[in-house]
Length: 604
Image (spheres, rainbow, N blue to C red):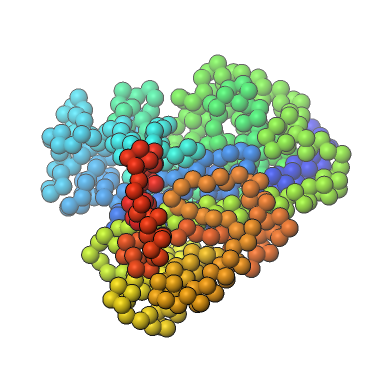
């Protein structure tokens, strides 16, 4: 096929249209940074609570490979450190739940069974001592993937109706939450892939070395055609896939986004949701591996897209899309029927022969309309203000959602800290140690640990103030000065706590001055953030916050946190506020609260 001359111009148009939709480099990097910060937040919250889990964000949101119109889910994986996954008997650890990975000639590629070993001695378990254990025909006791998901579902019963899809069990709409186990030992599947890729231009040597050390995960998902599909666990190299995605340049990211737009706008009309983002991602991996790096530039975008569709056509012709990393896995199995494959093959063949003319019919983000605009100069001029407004709105929304998640984790952590025997000083010491020990490469963890410290330190000072007022002691100036350390967390919450403390100690004029300062700062562009309840997060709402200012035009972040007053701060709260917090609530009103609302109301 001869490449049409207009492909270069259309490539530039497509690239600009994607930027108009939010696929600009700084926005991509901001998405990644935000979700890596959220990972650090989850990690620190679990350190403070003493739980042995690690959290990872995967998928389009954390990769930065999405736009608002794609409405990508949030993918989160929790990995438990209470379980030791063994690849051989020498990996057994005393005092832990030990599970041995089993694989034989009848086990599908990428799938494993987990044999249960005893906690005290390195011998196989013989009794069904837990509801999540099942016995294989041979007598081997297995840890069931399906029962593990059922246990997770049961733990979410107070949070609403849980949805199970593949390995995910989630009580939150648009969230895919997977509870998995990590495998830290070298695996032959990964080594085989590294050997296959060695000496190629991509992935790089550095990436392959990092992949060698990266843990994989066992997620609760069996092969659809397996006799043990309810017991099987799927090997998932999520961290390696994230490394590959983070190595993409902007042209590769845009090509991947266009593939997803084509899938949702065009392929979905033929095969529904049978083709997933992971299929598109796998196509990109093969395309980058087989294409010279000199071609991955903006003006070649349409040619590269055409090349990706050629690869997909080839795989559809042989009815097999191989997993990029794990050999022997056909990604079409269990996802798209043979009839659907034939229909999609006919459509893609037609699309290729028509020189990708169907991209003008992409409805999501109005891509088709943008491409049909008269000229690039006109497009840029007409879209410049809207583009800047959208990108700024995305930036504010990302920070808002990060803070919302941060406040939720903070609230749960503070609840547990206040109910534990460990002093606040020890908790603050842990946070300071983490912040000081963080290398320059882990600046996010350092930032989030300092963020946690500010709030823990602020609560510590507030409790000390409450104790002084309870004992009818004067508040010294040093204590009041320490409370100001938390002022820059947000626009209002720490200042309102200080004003409340000043009011309760009789410093009415000082309290009034603080209230006036809060009123001045709390202008119409400030957005309230609360980790306790759901708030509307439409992009247009955030656009109205920055209209006439721009996100970077704020002298301080335009957010005001909810004010939390724990029982330990009783004497820092005015009587009228205590009355409102403790007024009689009818049983009917209580039953209408969600589980989260019951938790935070119970803290008062």
